[in-house]
Image (tube, rainbow, N blue to C red; front, side):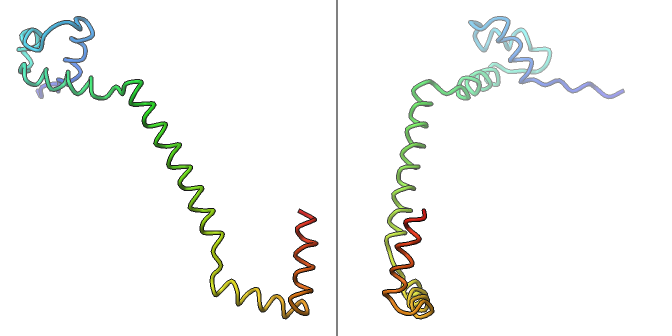
Length: 115
C-alpha cells in the first residue's frame, strides 16, 4: 500500500498558526516524524513573511502606477502634435476633393462647431 503524501509546508503553517512565537527548531522537533528540518521551517517561515507587503510598499506601488499613467498621457499628447508627411498628403488630397484649402478650412470649422 502506498504512503499518503504529506504537505510539509502546510504542516509548518499549521504549527505556526498554533504557536506563532515558536522558534524553527521547536517546530522542527514537533514535526520530526515527518522529516522536517529546522532549516526548512526557517525557510518557510521567512517566505510567509515576505509575501505580505507593508502599507508603505503598497503606497509606493500606487505612486509608481499613477506616475506611469501621467507619463503615458504626456507621450500620447506629444505624438498627436506631430504631423507626418503621410498626414500632409492626405490633407492635400482632401483639400483638392473639397475644392481648395479655403473650402476645406470652412468645412473643418463647421465640423468643430458641431462637436
